[in-house]
Each structure stands twice: as structure tokens, then as C-alpha cells.
Image (tube, rainbow, N blue to C red; front, side, top):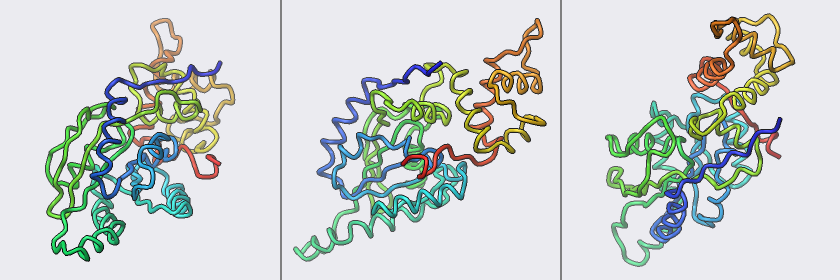
Length: 288
């Protein structure tokens, strides 16, 4: 049975879109923060419309959770599109030091023109951070600023207001609330965002999401799946796979039946906490 199209567009997100557009004239460069596990699915299509031709640096966050070989494919893909993409891990700080240098390089011509007009000490680079909920914006801001400024959380929708944040003497950041588009026309996008935690679990049918995840893993990471759950083979039938995992993990009701809700919870927890290793849920080839 097809999945109900996931929709999640709280009022503060519509307001955020308007506010970002209003602030653009103050911005030198935009940092587009994507989830390295699902770069295209976590790339809000409204962002192209909102940012237009503004210089943009793509940051593939949570790269430590993504399949390294696939992340390299994405870096090459964005390079071929004329955009610089950096793999980072905002949580640990890996790759974060490259961001300021890359931003300065991207706006070098603009600042040289300012100096040519007699401005000896141009202002700091002004950057805008945009991305969907739970992609790690607040964690990145705190890492860049070297102190706890932005509120963080493991649930999407934590940041709900804009704020300017100083990063040393050379950069100022404008944080914005995460923006999801009103409707995912491609149900695969909704599933991938749900699997990686970008959409609140409370509004989802987690069994549906786990079905999608298990089918993907069966095809792309079968050895990881078999090893994690002690399976000699992976059943083609999804109910049989749920049953096998449920019995291996003791997810049984008092009557001895498999508790599918518990199985779904375990599978999604294992994916999100890297118990199945580093996973990428889309490649450039799969998106073309």
C-alpha cells in the first residue's frame, strides 16, 4: 500500500521563508546545510528560488554517519554543478575550520571592490545558514562561534527565530529556522527524511518508515542488515523480515506474536545511531 504523502509545514516555517528573503540583501554568502546521508532529499527546492544567484557553499553535515564513498560521489556531483561542497561533522568539528576560509574566497572579488572604493577595513563576511530541520544548523553555529549560542536539540524545529552571531572578527552568521517545503511530491523524499529523523516521529507511521528502510537496506547494505540482526538470509517478504528481526530481538507480545511497533522502533534507532554502520540513502546516480 502506498505511503500517505508526508506533509509538515508549521506556520513558523512559512514565516521563515519570508524573513530569509527580506534579509538576503545583507548577506554575502549562504551556507546551505545538507544531510550527507541524503543530500538531495534534504535540499529544500525552495532554496534555489529564495537564494537566487547569491554565492552558496554547500556543507554536507553528518558526513561521519554517511558512506564515505558515496559522499565523495556527491562532492564531485556538486563540483560538476559549479558549486563547492565540503563534508563536515558539526558535532565533532571535523571539517568546520575550512568553512570560513572557503567563504572568504567566495566573496573575495566583492571585498576587493570595497577596498578599491576606499574602504580599508571591510566589515566581516556576512553569512546565512539555511537548511531543513534537524540537519544540524544550531550545532554548527555553536561550533563556529566556539561557544554555546544557538539552542540545539535532537528533534526538528528547535530554532524558531533569526539571530546574528559573531564568529571571531571575520564573520557574522544569520541563523534561520529550518524550512521544509509544504508537500513532498516524491514520496521517496519523505521516506528518506523520515528515516534520518528530519521529520517529527510523532506525526509518522513508523512501521511504514521502517518498511522503507528495511527494503533499502536489503538491496544496498544486505550484509550489514544480516550481521546486525543475526540473519542467515534476508527474506524477500517484508513481513517475514519484520518477524525474523522481531524474534531475534525478543519483540514479542504476551501472546507470542511479533510486536511490529517495537521492531520499527529498533530498526530506526539502529540506523540513526550508526549501529548498522555508515549509511547513505541516495547517490547522484539514483537522483538522475
